[in-house]
Each structure stands twice: as C-alpha cells, then as structure tokens.
Image 1 (cartoon, rainbow, N blue to C red):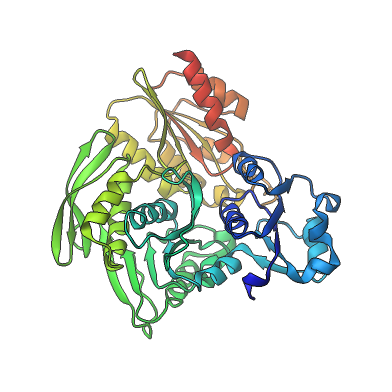
Image 2: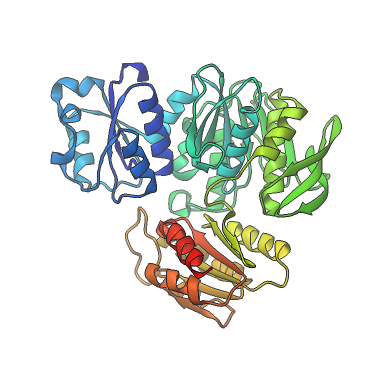
Length: 462
C-alpha cells in the first residue's frame, strides 16, 4: 500500500502509546487524523490539543463525516490495535464496508522500509534503549526519527521526526508477532523471558518468533544481543552478531562501575578499545546494561565515541521507567511500568542497592488476567522483597475475566505481613498516610493515572 495516497486516517485505539506515535506521524505530514479510544487520558488530551478529533464512545455517529464518506473511502486508512474486540461496532462497520484496515504493526512495517531502521526487541527494556538511541543519534549530525513505546523525557513525546536523516529507531514488539512486519537494517534484542503466553502458548514458540524476527533483517545487517541469551539469526542470514552486557563474556561491556548520586559512571569496553568515564544520570543498575546496549549499537552504526558519551550523559530518562516523581524531605516516590516478574525483580533489586536500609512500600496493579494466572507465584516472590505491598485489582486491558483469577492470587502468596488490596482512591490516601522512605507505583494498567494525584498529595504534606 502507498501511504502517500492516504488523505485521512482513523485510529481505533488512538490513545495507545504506539498508536498515538503513528497518529502524530500522519498529522505531521498533513493527513487528517481522527480516532476512538475507550477512555480519555493525558495522551488523548495532548492529541486533541494537537488538532486531532477524538471521541470515547463506540458510536458511528461520532465519527467525522469525511471518514464516513463513501467518496473518500479510497483515500482513508483505518488503523486498529489488536486489543479491540470483534464486537466493536466501529470496527465491524469499517470491516464490512470495504475500507482498508491495517494493524498498527503493519503500518509501522511499511514506514520502516523508507529508512535505515534500527529495531529494538525484547521482553523488557525496549522503550528505554530506543529512547537512549534517539538521544544519542540526535546528538550527532546524522540525527534520526524515532517511534517510541513510551514518552522520552528528552523529547516530551513518543515521536521524533527528522526530515533529513535516513535513520529511524523503532520498538519491535513481540506481542501478536508484531515485530515480524519490520524490515530493519540493525537490531538489538534485550531479553526473551516468557510473556504473552496467551499468544505463544509456550516459551519455545516465543523464541521461534525472535529467530524469525532476526531473519527479517536486511542483508549484512548488524545484530546486538544481550549476553547469555540463547539466540542467533537463521543460519542463512549473513548478519554480524555481537553481544552486550555487564561482564567480560560480552563484546561490549561495562567495568569499573560506580554509583554517582542516583546515576552511575563506568568504563565501556568495546572490541577494539576502552572508552573511559561514561556516565548516565538516571537510576537503576539495569540502565547501565541498557546504556551498554545502546552504545554498542550506535558505535556499530558509525557514530563517534564522543557522540555516544554526550548522548548518554544528556539522556533524561523515560516516563514511567524508574521515574523519580518526588524527592523531598528524605522521601522518594518512584513510578515504574514494570508488569512482568523479571521487570519487577530488576526494579526491586535496584531500589535495594540504591537505598540500603530504607523502608520501601509498593503498590502493584497486575496487568492482564492471563499474565496474573501464569505468573502469580513469581509476582509474589519478587514483590516480597519490599517491606509493605498493596495490590490493585487486575487491569483487564484486552481480556475478559478468567474465573478464579484475581489480585488475591498474588496477595495470598506474598510472604510479607503488611499487605492488602486497595482501590485507586485508597492508593492516594495510602501514599499520604503510610510510613515509608521509598514509595513505588508499579504496573502497566491505568495505575499511571494515579501518579499526578499522588505527587499532588505528597506536595501538600510538605
């Protein structure tokens, strides 16, 4: 499909982080953009302020007339998220009326063909590394466009567009095998922990999909893989494969790591040299590993060591990724998107290393009934590292409830005494009244809507 022939785009699920980046992309190039989402939020409000027409009821009468016009149908593209159910009225109308419908991943795949695309894949860390790459490339003369799965604090957006650069950074999402639509020139893989088992069924099928993804690289592409991952591209591909990590078994690794305020300094060992005095200003030891991966990819792409050093130092982080939202009077509030046990483990370990001896209290909102069912024990094990834990009810996202699956499954397995289940309003009161040094909100559902109210409550206490 020729995207240049499209004059209007309608998004079903426009408020999603990946969907909103595409909406901004089309709007930037003068396309009329409108859409539906289930509920308003910060992202949809920003899109509306940018001129997009958005409504929040599954109602055909609310769709702009130019989208519904039969005369305009050939110039109209409907982009939808796989999370939309088959019963959705608007989706059914467009599907049955002859419109061109495409998944978000298919459209991103078409866009990727116009660039030298760098694709970042993995169960965890995609958004942070992608945002780091954008920050580093934008320190260089090369520049880049970037389609991100989170809000970069450097950009205050999930989209960066360069009119002149041939480079584009894209997150390669394994959900629904979306990343198989991309045709990258370079790729990085962070992890392959079992997830989305509602799609894959088992971990070996997930690994097969990652191998297929690496098979999508253009000929003679470069692949950077986390050290220790049992992953290689298909043997027929003539790809250059390098490993990154925090130990000397990798081709790119950090050594002489030292904590520096909330950030870190380290020396970066690369295949041909050692780059001294690399530093990042964001917390979490996992972000050192992320920085090593981003640096490896940028150096392999031909950027200079000085650009890499400058880009990492100037990187401000990503919203909802180890995001320090409050730091006053000896109390620190951190918000994090972690929604898989391995992500929660990395978060909690980093917190304990950064703040030894501090009382850490966390609120976790499980995301998806299927993930809660599959990993209830693992969630409980990782959360039990904290001093007090409150759970919110499961956020269903695209799923219908599963009988017997709820937050209590995790609660019952927590090994700590101070635990309970809270509603959103109760969480705000809990943040204000509980005894803590470090307070965490954790999860990928709508817990993010509590962040600003919690900050306001805490500011009122000072």
